[in-house]
Amino acid sequence: MKKFYITTPIYYANDQPHIGHAYTTIVADVLARYHRLAGDEVFFLTGTDEHGSKVAESAEAAGKSPQEFCDEISAHYQTLWDRLDISNDDFIRTTSNYHKKGVERFLSKLHEVGAVYEGQYEGLYCTGCENFITEKELEDGKCPDHNKEPQVVKEKNYFFKLKEYLPKVKELLDSGGLKILPESRHNEVLGLLRQGLEDFSISRESVKWGIEIPFNKKQVTYVWVEALQNYITALGYGDEGENFKKFWPADIHLMAKDIIKFHALYWPAMLIAAGLAVPKVIFAHGFFTINGHKMSKSLGNAIDPDALIDELGSDAVRYLLLSQFPFGADGDIKAGSFAIQYNSDLANSIGNLTSRVLAMTEKYYDGKVPEKDFEFSDEVAGIWRQYKKAMKEFQIDKAVEIIKKLNAFCDGYVERQKPWELAKKDPEQLAKVIYNLLEAIRHLGLMIYPIMPQTAEKILASLGQTDWQKTSLKELQDWGGLELGVSVSKGDSLFPRLGGKEKE
Image 1 (cartoon, one colour):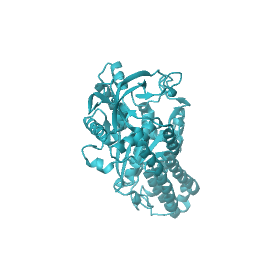
Image 2 (cartoon, helix red, strand yellow; image 1 turned 120 degrees about the horizontal axis):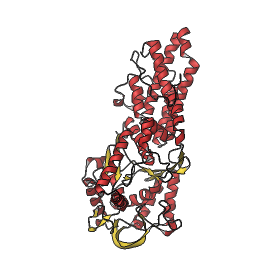
Image 3 (cartoon, one colour; image 1 turned 45 degrees about the vertical axis):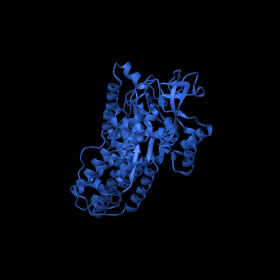
Image 4 (cartoon, helix red, strand yellow; image 1 turned 60 degrees about the horizontal axis):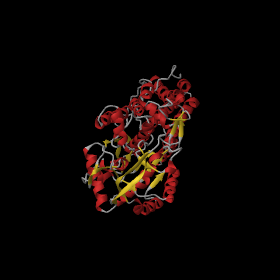
């Protein structure tokens, strides 16, 4: 059995979760569910980043202690992930004792090997970014991401010897030992290397809400340096735990492109210094706009994931977010078109096909699977090959298109064969047609599962498939899984049509 360790970034606990957080986490969940379906032993990690000056300021503004504030924000994330059927194996909070213990071990290791040194820092600091920035990064004297003038900071820090370890990072990038995806991000990282990078601070003297540096209790760990370590502390780094031995290194760190530098250069350099393996893949997807505009509270165009789930259901939200644009690229979400796409892709396609075929089975065969036929065998095997390739290459949007292709293939088959006419003149051919459609729907349910788990379970249950998750994907994807005489039932509509009746 292979292992598969996938992570999202841990989300900063200074505000409520938004649709961008949901998007990254849904993608990670799709990949985690697919790998479990494929028989891999999966560890899927997400969580909240709860230290730093920005959190402390937000807590103070809310009239709460930092810990109370973080408890509330973290609970919102966990509740939303439950509503979206996120199947994470752990939810790490950086205020947890085990994370603190792991960070202290990791920093002590860097100190022991001589990878850190004490120095004086003077420069510009953006609280919104929780990051030191240079004057050339400013726009009109302000941070371009937060439209605020940075503070001038002068303090003693501990620095990591980044320049000493970058040649080894470059070797791994060149050899493929560390893959940065998509390719445009790989080129971006190489560009950063060519520009030259300086050693960076791993501690803050003026910040109090954080984990103390083990070798100088007057300083706390720089929040983003600490946050990166969640990927190993969640596995029990420092305790020689079984999870760390089994799952590290990460198979994929998934995130948005704004934190690519930290993950693709700083994090591998620190791991190399500590004598640990680097992640296999770092995938930094693009940003999305809402109806052509950057998502912003001031514009009032932020999408509340909870409200969207209330309106459409969790599976539909997952599907609609994943199908808007190619995964990895920047894109635009047309929120006003969600209802139209819901009706066309879900109610009128997946929902309607399943309902029609099960209804015909009840009408013509008393709800029993007819004798096996293998007309679709080669076609569906080819679709499976395309689907598995898309998942292996993290092309989630292509997997969605492949599912639509199978659905359209079945719809076309119904219209060509006209089962309602075969029932009158060719019952032998009708039995073949109904079997092929029922079995194709079984395969459709399996492919849907990583993307829309509730829908998949309903489809497979309606086909009398109860123990399918105990069966290997290799066996499940073979044609002919439905046996003669198995009872099927139509059940309730999978996707009630919005604003009207279901398609007849």
